[in-house]
Image (cartoon, rainbow, N blue to C red; front, top):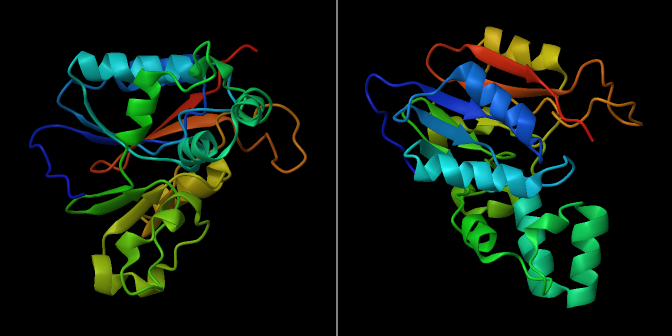
Length: 238
């Protein structure tokens, strides 16, 4: 979907929130967007953090208040919807409670609450502007029609930018999904790379077998025009 620039406003991209409501709210307070600023959010609103439903409620409140939000699907939203359609009820509830740790997304009957189900189904696969392509994970420029490969948009971990030019010219690709050390994110922004990762693993602040938590734990917000990068350290208490 192509998004026209609104003159005189900021264009802001926020990375994977993962249930970290307090951190997200703190970042919004720090960035202080106006209602007509264009706010793009890269998906993965749910799971891992303590307040998946709280994040969704806050986003719905922002929309109701008139903020200009452009919201992407992440793999965690897609996985939840797939599990809901494919699993029996008992397995699905187990999946949400134990794997996704997002039981508050369900009603007493074990179904996804209607307001959240509608929210998930309203999300977009990607956004394109005059200067950037914004996606949760990546774009598969190795196929004839990259914009039909929605699986890559939520799962791809490497975008082959060398093959991108015939599809998007010199536009930069902004993505989340892949947890990236903060120094790599800041370097990509500083050097105006054609691929800029924004997922610093907001949730990862405690010792982890994969990630060096000395280099993760921030929720990122990136201004597409000024190339300013806002960082908010995780402030959740679990």
